[in-house]
Length: 132
Image (tube, rainbow, N blue to C red):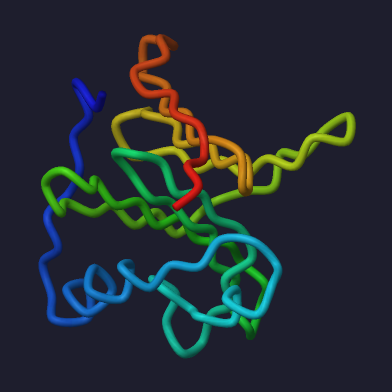
């Protein structure tokens, strides 16, 4: 269940297009992974997770390799895009993280789970990948 999570409303036509594209978010490495979902024409989808209540993706800019986080609250349709995601993989665990201006941390474990940590360092969301 999503609780105490503040997602930013999409404010531009491009962001609304990304929300619509999120319905196509592909997770994994098979043929379906070619679907870009929330990534734009200048980004590649490199990681994603689809839970009962949220979807998240890590997109990589083609030009300079920067990473961006895209999150979708499936219950409300609210989205958040953070342009400064980082690869924090360690000990064989692949993990990406992005920090919002308020200090909330969004952690993506590709094809496994999404964890959101409050500025007070409390886990406020933790869901595992679902299989449809």
